[in-house]
Image (cartoon, rainbow, N blue to C red):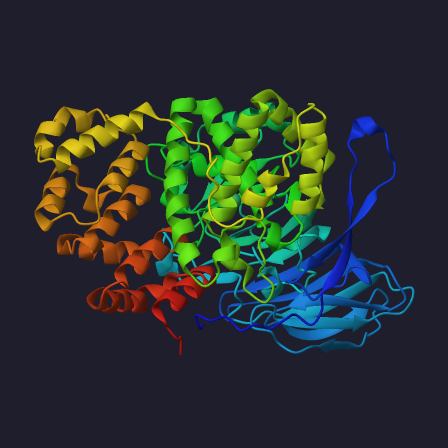
Length: 635
Ligand SMILES: [Zn+2]
């Protein structure tokens, strides 16, 4: 992929009438329609919209394809008598109505990000269409792993990643976060394997390899998910459990032991969990994200299995999406911060409830540091406006919006609102926001309207529009950004300063300190974060001899250390850097490490060498980022 993205406007821009619910206490039955343009779909729900999917699929590990039939229930909204689906790389074989009559269809021109529109002609009374199709072996959402790429090493593995607009590469669908539908599925997989979806799930292997799924709550297409492999289940509580390859199951169950408490803490904050069970599946290492909030079943990276539960805030994050994102969904990818900023805020509050303010402030400070660095980098780049919460991703890959802005600037904006209006009022506003808008979509503008009315006016506080101009529609990080405080981090800074002033590391830490785990993961991350880029080889060696960072089992600490190793040409760590990059597919770690390497010519050569070996283990989401960074063209 080229660095400069082609500016191709989608052929179809649709208008969706979202119905913003009025607050309950006003007793208004009138619903205000809102005009929404989603530039990342061909669908035109104002003409015809899907309401239910019945999906029947066969998973072939030989051909790396899904052979499937998708039967949609639909509603025609106007007299155009056509429905448009998004597709990407799908081979459409047949389209029929409920009576089995063939329907005429046409695949439009291909766009590099959006794929191709599938337009189906309808009769006036048509309420159902069935589409028989096969996916491409290169389908962007699907990652097919060989047995060698799994922990068990015996069976292959398949997982999907549909967000942002990749669902269309495995299901023809109206792939906009503003369009919701329920689904049921029957999936056939090779005997001995377990299949799971973002739906009601089996907990045991079915000998015939056929599995049935139901999702009876309406979800957007980006929450469609499938995983198939040698997977086992362990229940953690009445409504929580963990899935993983058998060899990882015990470690995963240990790491996630507090999960039910997290659900309780979340419910205590913002109302009932609406999805029944909450399970997590630990995927093989090539999963490109930390986690993906697929309803009922979070997909998670194995890099959070640190062995000491120190990285479980990721589970709190994915769980929080059960409210922010899955229940109240960003209407378009330009409103992505409504999914992620809310979720980081909610995650922090869950962590604070469970582990105390001291703990969550450390997380907030780490997030602020990353945010400041990313703001600075984006402001220097070709899209400084990407530092605004409200994005303008028309003609671009919506993945371009997956930066710290949506997550951390979003978080700090909400934290600012909390500090300005008081926690009690802000919590009441959020609880009401989630219940009033459940199972609907939200634009930034509709959110502002609700904020004005239900937080400011309701509490007799003045509406401050400057707030929106700086935080939502302004570049960079506003001067009134909240400042988290952590005494623990202050102590870490003192130690780092003493070390940099020449105190030997053996005087600053005793072996007992290390045995007693005096510092948490977050303190170590802060320590590595405050050390300068210019450590000498000797300093790196001393630190490594004492703390064995090069061999850390903690992926966050390892990444922070490896950044120093690259900056300081600490070659001792290079073999392990390569091992880590070849065996991990999480973009959060890959992107900074490759970015650091390409800063020098030798580093770039090293990066390319490693990438050649590693690339087959990465999902499209990761390769599309790293290809660009390395100017790499796949042949
Ligand atoms: Zn998230």
